[in-house]
Length: 134
Image 1 (cartoon, helix red, strand yellow):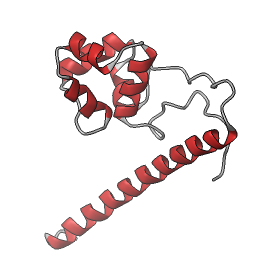
Image 2 (image 1 turned 45 degrees about the horizontal axis):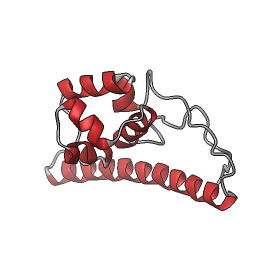
Image 3 (image 1 turned 180 degrees about the vertical axis):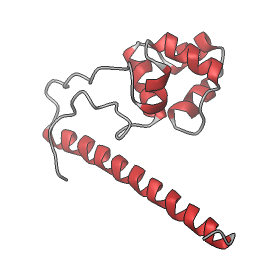
Image 4 (image 1 turned 90 degrees about the vertical axis):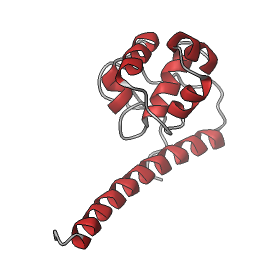
């Protein structure tokens, strides 16, 4: 692990978070439960849960409503760029071991994203080779 410092303003950037992470973070920052948000959007709680777990994404009309309710831009929700959340406050008295665990999880997420992108490129090359397009 390279850096054990606390996350800075890039905590919710595209390299460290997913769409679901940003939805969850913005919902919590807005003080809404999944149930509250589902009622305001007119969707089921399981839909919110699927978005937050990166199992689905909202259609454009719901994405627009979601961004408005949460006070962030649609671009930030989708990509981590644009008007979004400030970095979270440091938790007072957090145990050093817990901090290290959180940072390990963050690093693993970054590595997982990089591996998924690499796998996607390899899969594309394989498909092209199999179709005779190599």
